[in-house]
Structure formats: structure tokens, C-alpha cells
Length: 99
Image 1 (tube, helix red, strand yellow):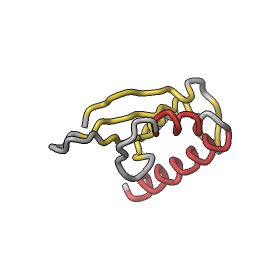
Image 2: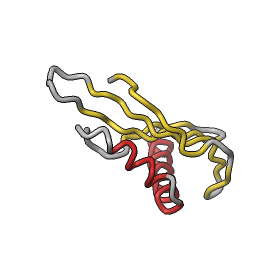
Image 3: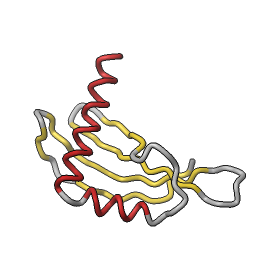
């Protein structure tokens, strides 16, 4: 997969549930297949003072590259951002507890 474009959603430190979030970024990767139609994978990248993680945001590739802008708009509102951060922290905690 090749990184196609990125959008910084948050780039100033703030505390959320006892962790300091430094940056949140949406990344769009173009999935390379032999198919004629292009597919895109959206990932969310988050860094805290101690951790960083990149997760698949939608759980499946999409062929509509407009989805990137739709997700950016969703993440730009408070409810979208807080629910996404909660989801990422659950994933981070699961990885930390397993490793």
C-alpha cells in the first residue's frame, strides 16, 4: 500500500482520560492490486507522550475516495473525535496488556 494523502485532525497536546494526546492524523493508503478499480484504506494515527498507534479506521477498503473527506469532517466534530480516541485507547490497552 502506498500513502496517498494525510490530514492532521489534531496537533496540539491535550489530556484525555489520563493520557496526553499529541497528534491525531487520518491517513489514506491506496491499495495496490491488479484490479483496474482503485481501493483505499483509511487509517487513524495517534501519538501520545508514551505511545503511537495506527489503526484501520473503516475495517475495509473503499473505492470512493470522497470517503476520506467525509471521515475528516466527522472527526472534526467533538463527538466523532472523542469516540475515535476512546476506540484507539481500548485498542492500545489491549495491545499493552497482551505484550
